Length: 185
Length: 360
Image 1 (cartoon, each protein chain N blue to C red):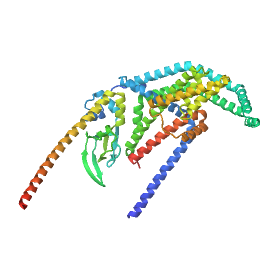
Image 2: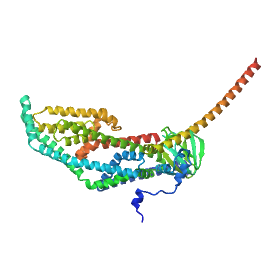
Image 3: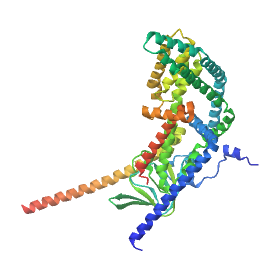
Image 4: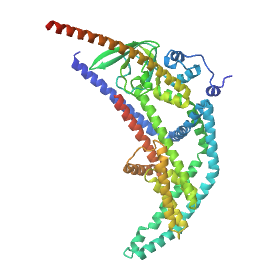
């Protein structure tokens, strides 16, 4: 015999949902166990975007991150009316995660290339999680910090390589200059 | 088809669409006005439930931080709240009722009129240039008697109306429990209605309004409670009769900025002088007591209770109170400024969102 009121107040645990599986694939949520992931599932929002529909625009205040469950998304910047494509994302990728930490304006625009389903996780929900379940909230923040650290290290490596290339070019230019000076004298 | 005719057709379609939207809005507004009298009671119950859930939500969150499931936490907090309210009412209601009725009898008696006539006599003796005939023409005693009588009767009947809402209290309890347990589900359901184009701005607006309103409501009520308790204690120390009723009035009146403290102090002074006509010094004691309570409010309570003020100009406050009084009497005066504060916060957030998201 079923008791709807009882089932509503004390719901039974169900199998892992698609949302939880998608969350597991994101490095930010890697340290969370199943119970904690179910709590995140209660906080996230599922949205569907048609081709050409913007998910967020460059310059708008950042609100949170998106995880692509299906479809394709284009990330691009607009400068003086020109579009500069930065990336094309597909299933399992995530974007906008920096906005989980601050309200800085979005640095790029995200637009759906085909029918796309996304999971949205926003900063106010993270703050609410920190208030109600601080341990889970801290794990998420740690995850975000980890992703930032990896990106920063990769950026440092790229900067170092570029610096070395620039230094090598500078040395060549100096060599050529001194050769020209010697020839002219 | 050339470009200019294409542009004309496009303009016409947009104009038609906008006209249709406007017409639909008008129809909805008309229907709302027609239906409102029939659903006002239900809306009031829902509003009271939302108010209770806003006040109790931090306590449920506190339970959740201690790993108590939200359902159990909501039940526990709600039961505790009901118990505290029941105990408070069990002891307070008889005292308030007794004092309110006693004040009502006092102001309806001849003592205020006699006192006022003695005051009029004193004025005409000290200041003979004031024509006694003119004084009587104004019928000051009659007017003041009517004002005080209306004020006290209004407060008494308001209290009894509140008490009479016990039958609706159980409905409010059930709705409050569901709101505490499922507030996130309800939020998500509301948010899912926002179209993609306005999703992030709509969400920002929703969260900011929710947070600001929660802080504001909690702040206002906490402040009113603290001021009420301090006033009761102060009046008790001064051995003022009917200190519970007057202290509660002072606490409620504190919801009205600038005017509230005066509204709280005046009944205390009037009732004290009626009871003790030979001790005018009591007025000074009461004024000093309320001044101290206000100092504590401004320097200790208000800074602790964040987001209580929405910075409304004093002239606007007075206008709002008059409008509230005209619409709903004493109750309207009490809730006018908090309601205006809520509307101000909402409009400010809408403007911020439109500006930052360039919503078209």
